[in-house]
Length: 221
Image (cartoon, rainbow, N blue to C red; front, side, top):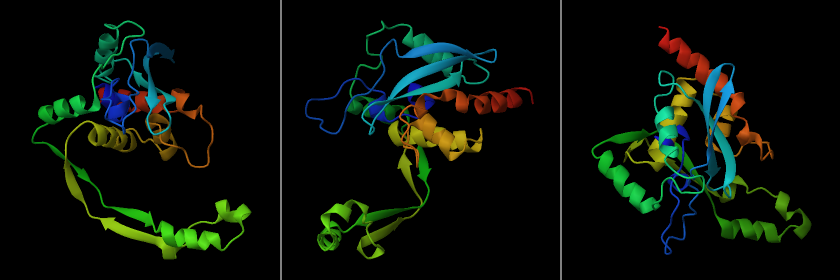
């Protein structure tokens, strides 16, 4: 439920890593990593997540603290309240989390829509860079002649925590609540194009009206 609410990566959930696991930096929450705030008469659960792949950049994920609007939020809050402020909430490794998720979702799959992988031929690119003055090399973009494209067709993957929870929550934000790209980037911790503002991901008030308005509309139908 926590991973879904924050559209999180596995490493943003767990707080431990095996010494041999060199690819995981645990960024999971501790007991004090939440707040309950108010927005226009609504209680909002603000989860203080840390964004993996961005050096643990803080992001605040705000969700309505109302069972009719967001059925997971109060359960997550109750679970956090069982822990002391500096006590890890999910004190296990990415591998243990994956094993539990695979067992829980056994037999379920989710679709990955077609996409394109672009890979740079670094040897050829470096040859090009060596021919230009060193001071302007940082501004030379790879030309199309050194970029290889591989089209990945639509396919299915087993339902587990990392990709599936992020995928489903991001899709829900776009389709059900009408989040635009900037709002989704703020929510999920993606780097926002053209912005160096490291504080933008603390601005849950920018998108919370869409969660409240659409959810309230559905409950009144």
